[in-house]
Length: 282
Image (cartoon, rainbow, N blue to C red; front, side, top):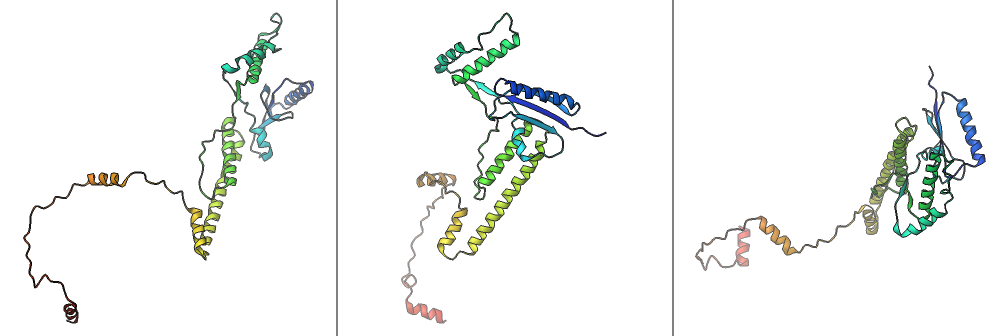
């Protein structure tokens, strides 16, 4: 029994559907009905998007590779989230936006409860956006700013690392069956191969600089390429260091025994040059 491909499509809008867009959405639904068994689902929901075309996101649960250019569309499938925070200084602007909003004027006699709820939510969101109380949360993974200070870790390595972390973030959002995991493992392998190649090239260049140094300037130029940051000057006084280490050792006991001076005039005199020469000859 052959396994059928499972296709899932999601369409997002940041506005009400126009007649042309409604026609396209209906065509998509008809195509989905024709492909029974292959189409898992097709949903239409409201979301913000920076694209100016009709955005269609398709997720394939199969082992066939997809083009890299399509990854940006797949990674945008997660709907954005918003944060509402009340700002007392913008209360007047929020009140005016709610007052002039056409969504508030509803006919409660004929309107459906769900429509009233949707209109009220949209009116609140629009008024909060106009008053600066609506914040679009970042859908990208939060970076911990773990800056790698290796001299060979350049902008190319940092860009590849960021791409790999972004793929991992969206893989976790999509779930385990997502085809993005294959691209994440491929990107991770490329990143580690890239930093390994950069480190080897840097080591080869450093060795060449040391071996071909012809002047003190060339030598110190090679040293400075791998020289770390200098430590800060020690601000602890020397007397504090001396007192601390002196307290770690027991003081030496001074002897109270006094020895008498035994001076012999013939033995305690300085050596002369003649006596030294005679001693060497012997």
